[in-house]
Each structure stands twice: as structure tokens, then as C-alpha cells.
Image (cartoon, rainbow, N blue to C red; front, side, top):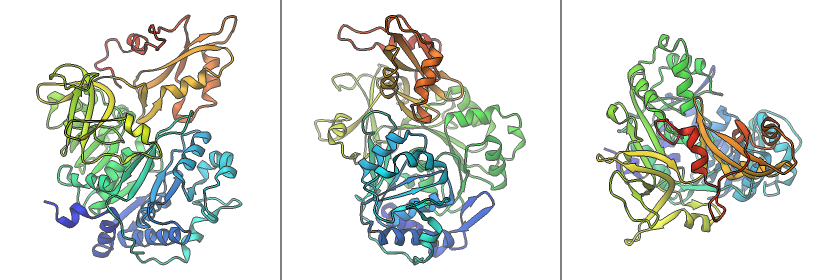
Length: 523
């Protein structure tokens, strides 16, 4: 049972507690370097003081666009300790999208690493909201940028004592896109507190050794990382996803937990010497961002020690399922049932609940939901439905059915979002880029199956009369203009694209040949 302090304490207070009571316990491992809780917490304090000295106050936004590193790790928690809101940004987004995200968030400070400077260099001069002295460089020197180590060197290493309210902003996680302003999903501390309430369910504790090989800007990572920190465990950071290095570190560090996306599990499954590594220390493995195929779930619960939970949900919260596959091996074709503290319904277009076994849209209610889309109250309203009792439900846009035992079977996606390798790709953004090509008259982007990525974007285009271009030419042209995570796997030429009488693209018809015979229609 959790104590009242554990149920209600924010992450900053819990981390401070572990630093005071277990200062010599290991907090972070990165390559050959190690930090204890006492050492790491002092770095967090210096970062918090440095931010406060720059004028960062309660709920102010601080952006990070950087490769995974110890500095990034400590910065995230320094932002939280300063009472500010973290805005982790993906280096896979386009420079134009990043400029929109930074401006939309109102970030006062920006942290960056050398690997992202090619993106920042294109937009740096237009980042007017960053305060004087607020450009902090982890590992490079450039005009107008302050070196991280120099910046924190003279700062106090004591806790600044900033009071944090449960409803204060914790982070903004942005969707990626090339058109319009991407949506920023705002979470408060109360929502994030719910993550470490999973302690007993997933065997977290001070002996936890979490190996992290997904990016620090991803909500996927935070699901596993926040409870590890809250309960005083150690984090083992991988600078990049590498199958052999993951296995070597997992064995050497006696890892107990990990979060992986499907493509990473696929690579581990296919690694010739997987069985040659000692993984007996594992207590739990997680997978999210896209559904794993049933055969992979069966492999994970038979070939790899410890429990395995597949998580289906949204960064927005509300809609969420857990499948403990080791407990329900006959349900690996599903994504599980509603997580504790939440409720799921399958509804028709009129938002009426349908009987079990019938197909509809998945909606969810939970005490753990996003505050809303930042600066977009209209989009927040569109994404939600309020029942007669006044409860607010989050709409998923995913189609599925609930079996007789309450397990959810995903069937198709009502939205045109594509989840590839654990990252969201919006078809409308890719279509808009394709339509800019001088030879393209009409375009559609759909998700098609991918053994490595779960699903991948395919472009279907109709050429203008008299125009001449190959699918490969158009794909190359578009991919040069898209973010790295948005790139098209292929472009096929079509004579026409099917549309309804009101002109709506009939994407179900387009997808059907590619997904025929698949075990499920998502991922």
C-alpha cells in the first residue's frame, strides 16, 4: 500500500527524498560513467537554480532539443524542480515544425546538442521568445550559446524549495507535422503522479534497474522512467537503439525493467545470439506505441524472463489498456482491458455504447487525462465527449470491439494517423507535401504493413494530365522536405483515387489490399 506522501508527492519531492535517504545508491548509468542519487540530485539543483536565475518561474516553458545524454536526463528533472514545464522536442521533426512548436509553447529557454544544431541553425535567428542567455549548449560552442557545464558551475547545489501544486504544468508533448501548428499535449503533475502508482503492479522499487533505449522526448519513455525515478531506482541510458549493445548492457547491469517499441522487439527476436545473454534479472518488460503481433507476444513471454505488458493508449490519456500477456496467453490477439482507475466504452457514431462484440470507436474516461491541447481549446473540445453525468471522455479515433471478457480487439483506425516504429505520423501532412509536387494532381497516404516498423506510410498519387514522373522520383522529392520520421516508404502511381459523393477519400478501400489476410488491421 502507498503512503499518503507517496500517493500525493510530486516527482521533485520524491527524488529529493531518495537523494537525502539513499545518497550513495546508483541513480544513472551512461556508457562508462555512473552517478549516485546524491551526485545526480545536486546537478538537478544546479540546473533548477540556473533556470530560476534566467527568470524562469512557475509553469514557464523550457524546451530541450537534444540527443539522449546524462545532461538531457538531469535537465528534464531540473526543469521540474524549478517549478517549470518541460517541452521535450524530437530531433526527427522538420526545422519548420520545430520553430512552430517552440513558438507555440512560449519556451523561454532552449537546451540543445551538437546533433540537433543543423535543425536549430535554420531557425535560431527567429526564436524571439528565448530570453537573453537562455540558449544552453550541451556539447558544442556557437555564438549566442552558453556551455552547459559553465552555466551551472557556480550555481548552488541545494534544493531551491519551489512549491509545486498537483495542477501545475509538468510537460508538453508535441505531435509532429509539417503543416499548421502541431498540437501540444499538456500534462499536469497530478496526471504524471498516476504513473508511479503502478509500483506494485509492475514490481518497481529501489532495486529497479531500468534500461532506456527509447528517446527522452517520448511519452513512451516517460511511462517506464517516471516510476523508476519515483521509487529510487537506477536508470541505464543507451545513447541510441542498438540490439547488441542493449543485450550486453542488460546482462552487465542486471536490468530489471525496459520499455521497447515493436521494431526493437523485432530486432531482438531476430538477433542470432539472443539466447546467449543472461536476462534472468528482468522483472518486467513493456511495449507501447503500436500493437505487437500475437506471435511476438508469445515469444516474449516464453523466451524472456519476467512479466510482459503491452500498453495501448494515447498520450492524451483517458483511453488506455494493459495486457499482461504472461497472465493471459490466450488473449495475445487483444490489447488487454482498461487500466485501473479508468473506464473504456465502444460507441457508435451517436456516442451510444454498443453491445460487446460489435465494432465502434473506443472512448475512455480516467482521472489521468491531459489538461488539454496547449493553446488549442477548440481542438481539445473536438477530441472529447461529455456524458449525461458530466464526465468527460477522451475520443481515440480507433475502431475496435470488446470481447465477452472485456478485452479490446483493435480493428482499424478512424483517424488517418500512422504509427511507425512507435512514432505518430499524420497522413494529412504527407499528403500536403505530395500535392506541392508540380506533377501531382491528387494524393493519398495510407498505412501499410511493415515487418520492422509495424506499419509504414505509402503514398498513392495521380499525375496531372501530360505530366511525367516516376513514383521513386516523387518519393525522393517529398522525403527531402519531410521530417526524418515522416518519410514515405514508397509512392505508387494511380489513374484515380476512390472518393465518396462528397469528395472524401475512401481510404478503407485503398488500405484493404495491403492488409488482407493480416491478423489485425492496425500495426
